[in-house]
Length: 280
Image 1 (cartoon, one colour):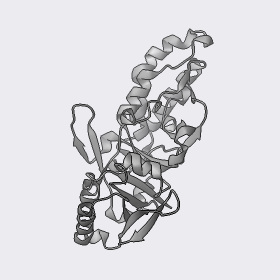
Image 2 (image 1 turned 120 degrees about the vertical axis):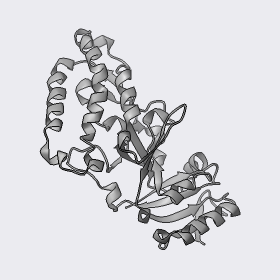
Image 3 (image 1 turned 60 degrees about the vertical axis):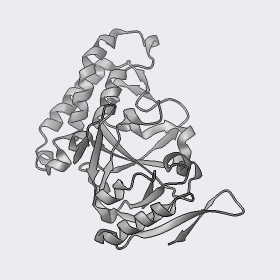
């Protein structure tokens, strides 16, 4: 399977450096990310589950033996720790009447939004709206990734939430989260059906495992190294400049790992609202 990601013209560093940002959900452009309607019913029942999960992760010898990049150690455990910061507060709510349920658990979601990084990809290289929104009005470029590469397949167990691709589900109603489902990245895999045109897949990781950190006033940037051979094609936008095209050509020519990379240009179709592609 091939997936795609759109970039603005200035983001040539992604293909030059072999590093890509995994973004904190708190920086996403959808304000509903990590903000489900939270049910506090069953909080008491959820308490043993959290304790059991922590114990199991902490004593899993097989996971302990994995390379630190993959285990680091116990990716899920990091998220659980972040959630536990607010868990004591939620215990107080255990006796709260059900009618008070609503948009709650904001502290917990914010913690997850700060420790998890997400790489967002799409199935479509010809989406007019995404070219407009994410590639600076068709002036940027789109990268085609080969998802069969090991980089996208570092899943350790059937239950592992991290380091493998997950398909986003588009739903009409705001998801309801019971407290016992507070661990993991499932909340990041549901979006309003308003976004269904993006046909999105997500690759999640723990930001602590990033290879490079750029500290910023608003939000730190976490970069992860990727094998350059996962790039199969670079598509120039319909409004991309000759300067951008020349720069990308030079990068491809001077990078041995890109000897197989195809360079393509998008053009506006004459008789319909769609894009056509031609090899350069």
